[in-house]
Length: 296
Image (cartoon, rainbow, N blue to C red):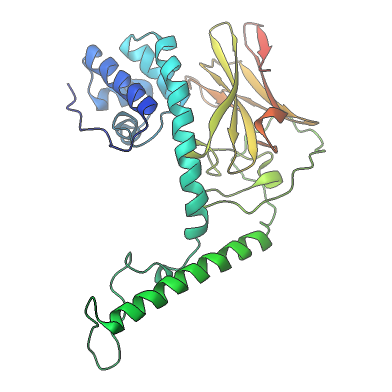
């Protein structure tokens, strides 16, 4: 039986409730974290993050956990959806700050990367002295100026075009999207129209930077529009998926299609399409059984 550490104090109450339910499910099944990782196909380090409230669990992992622990999937998903929205709100606010601060050189962040340089003469200014206070004020002014410069530079730079070699596009359609290329945020490798046709996970737009915007069900299969506001892109996903199932995402005249990448994979997702908002995207599933359906 796993021994759980205390959840982070700053964890949103809805996320906390969901993590606690996952922990109870693992406990009732008598599984260790290693066993959960082995049976679900998701890495042990990932599960340690999910079960300790440090990482938001993706829908595929939640469905897999329900299967291996015997927990009703609908019960877990009912708590997962508000928990993911809470995580998304929190990480969007964090991303708005780190997207700029992450571009600053280490020397522009006093106090985080070691002590300031010694003044001439080899003496260090002691806290509270005039020299120390003056240097602190200069460092603060330098940081503020650096943030301003970084913001201006971010608005002026455009990412060069390029397609990710790991994109899993099956259907190519001419693009009529008015979405323009944007500067990729910290942790992502594309933005706006540059994301079209690329893989969300490979470019860093998935995971913590994404949230489910629309859903529909086709039999027991969940169809989702996944949306990354940070990257300005959306994609389709189905869970659980089986060989022969396909999922497509459409935004205007742009369409991308994906399928189950490897036998036994519990989900399938499409390459991304650039959008200004999640409302522009629609995801559709066509199952091997012949059943099909779309999100609103």
